[in-house]
Amino acid sequence: MTARRIVLLGPPGSGKGTQAVRLAAWLGVPHISTGDLLRSEVQNRTKLGLQAQSFMDRGELVPDQLVAEMIRQRIKGATGFVLDGFPRNIKQAEILETVTTVDRVLHFQLDREEIIRRLSARRVCPQCGAVYNLISSLPQQDSLCDKCKIGLVQRSDDTPEVIQRRIDVQYAREIGPMLEFYRKRNVLREIDAQGDIESVYQAAQRALE
Ligand code: AMP
Image 1 (cartoon, rainbow, N blue to C red):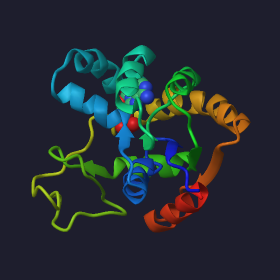
Image 2: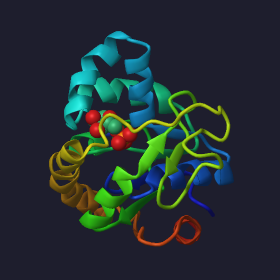
Image 3: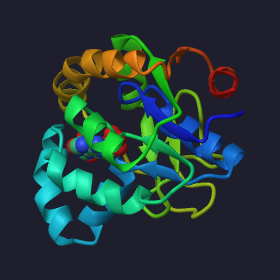
Image 4: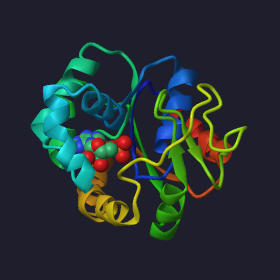
């Protein structure tokens, strides 16, 4: 049976957000991105958004207890989901285990040079959040969102300095123990994220069978 409660792990820029959208549509389950949820809290200037913003601007993790409550509300009772950006550390993996079972964890692997190259070229629509890439996934009209027809922008945390911090502080330090955690539970599958969107998608689908 195809797995339906799925976690995607990988460095920023590994394409897990793009793949999460496609996999969720394929499986008919919600795509839950903690980054998107937090950016919407920041935009709406909620209490959580105001607390989270400075961590996000610095490229650091928002404290676990703030994110945990948000994710708990979102997945309580869900029979399927594609989680993108959560968990980010062992503590969060343990919290997740108290809320739901995870059927499969896909780890998207990508080397550092390629991460920086991709993130520097990433552009987003400030209205609908659609993601484009100046190297691999151009909009139809120069710098305009295909759907909203408004100018694309660079995420404020996609600058070289903040990218380095997101890789070092968030990812490199935390990924090893999380992989070990899920390997022990026999749900981990490795995905080579170096290829184009379609071939990575096919590899991800196969890993969920
Ligand atoms: P992302 O869109 O996944 O790259 O997330 C953008 C930012 O949101 C990250 O750099 C963190 O500051 C914050 N964030 C997203 N998910 C989490 C999480 N699970 N735990 C803590 N902070 C998070």
